[in-house]
Length: 404
Image 1 (cartoon, rainbow, N blue to C red):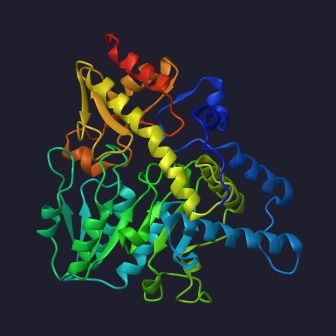
Image 2 (tube, rainbow, N blue to C red; image 1 turned 90 degrees about the horizontal axis):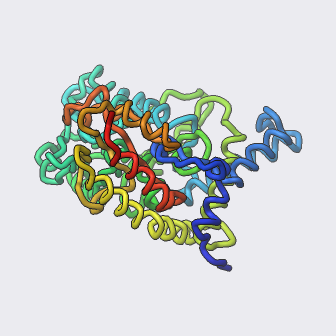
């Protein structure tokens, strides 16, 4: 594959228009900024097609249909999956509830599922719905340092376990999980594994084959794309899932999970983002190898920033960071509190200094309840590959100021 040089930080930041106006952005866990390629692709689609649908028989409809095919194929490449295993819709939450509806038609009294205590509610509430049909829900509790221990999972697994739902990285605390090890334990008892990779996807390259998961969700809008959700379903399981669907859609057709008209302009934008990612790592064309190079570049940029941020924040009196106190076992997201100050007040103090950071529970109800922090939650600082060392210094400087 022809290669160019990986993008420098200056070249990267120039791709994101909001960063040209002195924005210091630490709310990446809520949604990333869009590169110019993505913005242009959305604009071009709407300019050319408006709300034209993918109806056959005329040029525009045929072109839009081909766009959807390309988006599915590219997303499959992003996940290391087959195109027929990837559903695209408005959100991961919506897709998970559709999957839960299928499970409710398959399981009942005597069946069990396990949900980790680190979860965002998008990977918890849909599966709790199964309690309505008699399924028992067990919770895989986190340890005092907010990590998940595999021995604790093994103690919950039985031959009755149908599903284990776990995040690859906590959206509120940044804690990571060894998904491959979890998968081996779950499959040893015949269960299925559902992975929430929404927060992991901006920081690590997803590989559904290496992780050996049965289902996985992620959100392109957390990966510098527009507001979309994606769901991977292991191909051999698709036909047996009794998803409520349009009658004419075949049981083995992934589109049975994609209700309604697709958001074609957003699919176009997502393709633009994926082209940007290829360029990020120094590749001329999009491919799995290009993504590998891109995520290598992301790690090069983020690792020192996370170390700088964690060291700087932990060095401030009265600041508590939840989860591992080192960079090991976490991605570039910190959940913290400042003594004597509400999370919202801390976020507003950062905002007054030109820094965008958020406060709240971020739908991470279980871990924050366990920590005694719900519903006010934490201040969340989440960096991305376009974050600069100066951005980190600015955050640490504000947190070091005397609270009024």
